[in-house]
Amino acid sequence: MVIVFLVGYLMIALEHPLKINKAGTALLIGTVLWVIVHVRGPVFHPEGLGRGIQLVLGIVPLFGFFNV
Image 1 (spheres, one colour):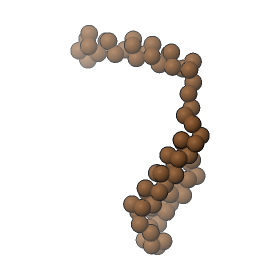
Image 2: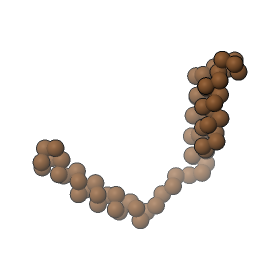
Image 3: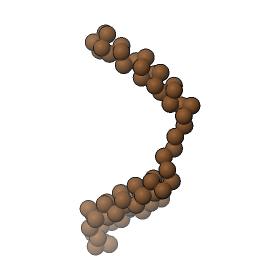
Image 4: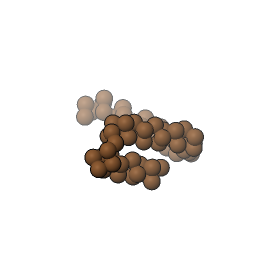
């Protein structure tokens, strides 16, 4: 994915010499990256979910209680 992003970024940076459209290139690269993410599937670690929920449930009430 990094290589696809870097190639797209380079194409956008060199739009004038390559005679390409910046917006079209950005849309194409964005679409390709989303397809790669969708095909590879999300990275989901259930063991980390519990710790994240505990952290959020432990910190968020403090904002309302202490008016931070």
